[in-house]
Image (cartoon, rainbow, N blue to C red):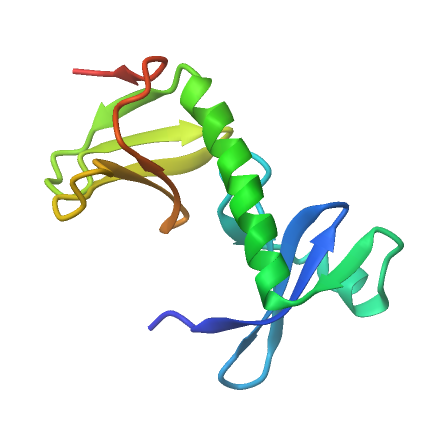
Length: 142
């Protein structure tokens, strides 16, 4: 069974969202926002910087952190929508398309119960963007 990690503290490291997480046993970890996809991924390299502090590290409250995450994800989504990403069919009715962005896997999830948002873009199983329509720059492979 996958280890459940929950946010413990929130930071901006050089303006980018980073969070300290904790598991049920009390162990600490760090998740940083991937600079291309907007997904939070484990970061062992940042653990010492958070523990020791850094000049470019600011601790945030949850509300400020969520605002920062939303701003970053919006900016990254606009950039991703303009990229000529090649989407491949999966044969899965719920996740019909997959692709890669800077080496990170992406999946599209259909949103049949959200008529205004046709797809969600997932990176590392996290919804990082919501789409009304297919971006013109994206390519669907047969």
